Length: 159
Image (cartoon, rainbow, N blue to C red; front, side, top):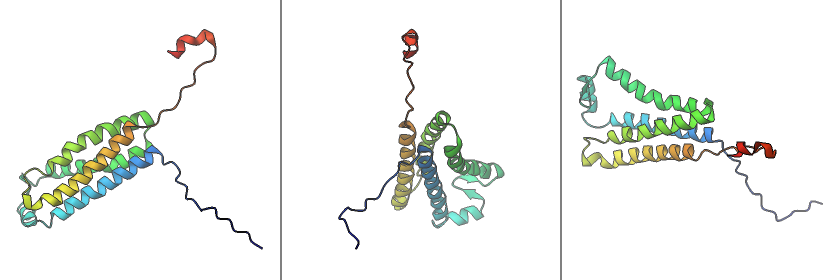
C-alpha cells in the first residue's frame, strides 16, 4: 500500500552564475540587434538606398562594412568573454562595454520619423533594458569574503 502525502512538489531554482546571466543577456541583445537591422530592410526605400550604394547617409564602402562588422562583433565577443574572463576583468569589461552601447543603441533612432517611433522605441527600449540588466548584474557581482587572520600579531592586515 502506497501512502501519499500532501507535500507539494516544489520546484527548485538553483542560483545562476553571473557569467551565465551576462552571456545570456549579451546573446539576447545580439539577436535583437540583428533582427532590428533585418526588419529595417522592410522600411520603404531602404533596399533602394542599399542598391544605390547608400546606407543611412553613408556611402557603402569596405570601411563602412568593417565598422558595421565591428559593431556587431562586440556583443558577439561579449557572450564568449562573459563566460571566460576572470571575475574582476569580466566585471569591468561588461560595465564599460554596456555603458558604451547605451548611447550607441539610442543613436539608431536619430533621424527617424514618427511613423516608425513605435518600432524603434520598442526595439531600442528593449536593447537599453538588456544593457541595464548587464550593468546591474556586473555592478552587483557577488564578492568573496576574505579570511581575516586570527593571530593578534597580524592585526595590521585587518585594515
